[in-house]
Image (cartoon, rainbow, N blue to C red):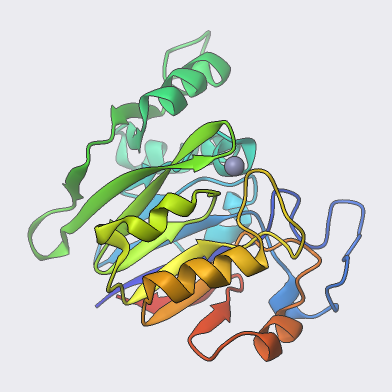
Length: 254
Ligand SMILES: [Zn+2]
């Protein structure tokens, strides 16, 4: 059985924020949101999507013992600042961890996080950068997972959408053209950016996320990248039955 775990579904600051600000969110577990990351698991094939600044606690609380590869959606700090934390997986396997992303992200990370890719002073590099293709697969035998990718607008940069087992992961996006993408039709599950109620230049807001979901018609939509003005229970009451807010630790069978 394969599944995807939403390790974190918060906005770039998480809820509560570092200074204890909860916004409109009630102080309950479903509103405790760390920064966006997800994990696809099929047997021993354990594929991380993004490595948030909270990745250490996310993997600890989900008892994740290995990471086979890492897919990055884009270069932003809330997706990549946890890469350094992955060192123990390199120490255990003695192999560099394969990281997959688009050219812009790889170039940026090699400049800003050079030590992760090239030997510096006393420390070995832990990551190997790989350019993503439109179609590729990860894992062996019956643990293999096939991916399709799409590049979508996320403000002035692009973000990669990963589509696998009739699931699409779109955590950071403001691109209405996705409604025309055949690959995003007839999905079992659409995991979709929904930052807040107000408009935002680089993310779908509540109304836009609902519109995208209505047009693409997946069986189920899970809203992620939720900012602190979106309380979990308030969303549950407001959303149609097939649209659900994510929460940290949510598991979806594939
Ligand atoms: Zn971003």
